[in-house]
Image (cartoon, rainbow, N blue to C red; front, side, top):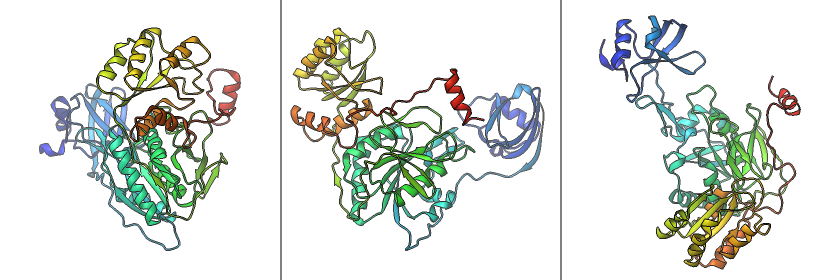
Length: 461
C-alpha cells in the first residue's frame, strides 16, 4: 500500500494499519480487548502520537483506539470523505427582506483540518448557505467575508472595520445584518459594535456556534437560522447576540450586546444576560420580546457610526497580595486607561494605593468594576472605596469588566480629557449601566438541594 493512504499515521500505528491492510477512510471493524468498534478510520494530525487509531463511529463522534488493545481489524468498505461543502447560489425573491452576512471566522464558519487536527476558519459564507438551505425560506442573503480569524484575534482594527462596513450596508438600505463570529470574544465585539454603531434602524445580530459543523451536536445551523430570522423579521433594531437558549433545540436567546457573557466553555447554552433578562427569545417564525424597552426597527437608512478605539487600555483583575509594580509597569508602558475588576463592592489592597495615585496623577484613567459580575460598584460604603476615589478611581456602576474595558478604549479613542471621558463612560448607550438590577436578573441555581432538583426534573428526564 502507498503511504498516501495512511494520512498522518506514523510509527507503530502505521505498522498496525499495514498489518491488517486497512486504509484511512476505510469502513472498519476493530476488535480490541475492550470490545468491538465499527466506524471510519480518520486521518491523524501530523502532530499526534503513534499509539492510537482514530475512528469516527455511527453517532458522528470520534474515538481513539489504543493500538496495544487491538486484536484484529477488517476493512469492510471504503469511501474517501470530502469535507468541503459546495457553495450554493442563494435564491432571490422580491417578496423577502434582504439580509447581509459578514463573515469574520470562528466555529460557525469552520471545518476540521485533518492535517493538524485543529478546527480552522475555512468555510466560506457561500458554503454555509449550501449547508443550511432553510435560510432561503427566511430572507435574501448576501455575504462578505471581512476577516478569517478566530475570535481571540479580533480586536480594535476589526471592530472599526465592522462598524464602517455595517454603516455602509445601512446606507444602502439593508433590512438586517448578521455577523458570524467565534464565541470566545463574541461578547467583546457585541459591546464594541453597540458603542460604534448607534441608533441603527435595523437588527444587527452576532452569531456563533459552540460546536463545529462536522459534529452531530453542532448548534451552527440552528443558530444561523435564528439569527437570519431575527435580522429579517425582528422589530428589535439593536446590536444583539443570538445563541442557544436552553440546552435543547427549543429556542434561542437574543441578548443585548452590553450585558451578555459567555458563561461555560463548552455548553451550547453558554451565553447569558448578566444583571438583567434577555431581550427576547427566537424560534422559526417568531421573535418574542422579553424586555419591552428596545430600539424599534425603522424605515430610514441612518445610523451613527463612531469607529474609535484607543488600544493602550487594559483590565486588571485584582487578587490578594497584588503588588504595586503591576500598576507602575502599565503606566511605564504608556497605558492610558485601566479597568480594575475589584473585590466585593469595588476594592483592592492598600499596597496598591500609592501606585494608583501615581497613575492618575500622570493622567491614566482608572475605572472600577466588580469581579462578582452581578451587582454594582459601591465605593462609599467602606473607607477602602472612599480612599480609592480620593486617589482618582471612578466607579463604573454595574458595567461588566470587559464591557467597561471596551467602552474605555472607545472613549479614549475620542478624547483624553478626564471630564469628557468620565461623561462618556457614565452615560449609558444601551444598558451597559442600568438603573437597577431586576429581581429576576440574578439566578444561579445549585444542584443537590431538593427544590432545585425538583425544578430540574421538569426539564431533564
